[in-house]
Length: 201
Ligand SMILES: Nc1nc2c(ncn2[C@@H]2O[C@H](COP(=O)(O)OP(=O)(O)OP(=O)(O)O)[C@@H](O)[C@H]2O)c(=O)[nH]1
Ligand SMILES: [Mg+2]
Image (tube, rainbow, N blue to C red; front, top):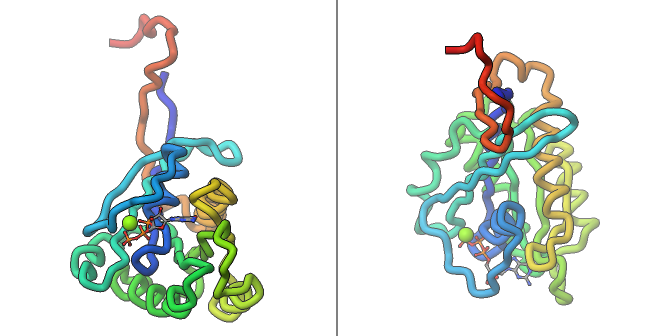
């Protein structure tokens, strides 16, 4: 059984410690580690899913947020279909740095028109009671910086994690001129037990 899947690359950016790896792990493996190590360079995981009738292979690239790893992460920005700008609601500095992350992405991904590129903003660690960034401030930043969608998430208790990644997919698929850029790959469904087509080699 051959089926068409669309490969979409999304990239997680944001300060070290805001929870990028935890969000990816929660979404792909549904696990959470309260003592996760800082990422060095980049890592990626794939997740296959169906969104609004589209079979999608989501390739999630998780980057190291610490400044000392800048040169290791930036070569991987090119070709991203969506960028998830991530901060932690209990870390005001990580919120103030969103503009820098957006600029870094646009520069190294060579995005010509950042205002029309699909960014999604994530305010993570919603479960932590001591907030430094209000939802209203975050929404205002999103409105004033290109009208990006905003999700408050918790990788720890799984709040809104799937919704945020699925919004990223919808934003990409909604772009009018996607058709020319989509990478269609044929995949083999190993679960399906139908006999081979006799007309086939
Ligand atoms: N309470 C709480 N802790 C979280 C959440 N997400 C991540 N953490 C914790 O915050 C710490 C940092 O999380 P990471 O996922 O490693 O952060 P990161 O953004 O990948 O950091 P770098 O790899 O250095 O860029 C870890 O101890 C996580 O367990 C969350 O939603 N709630
Ligand atoms: Mg990490």
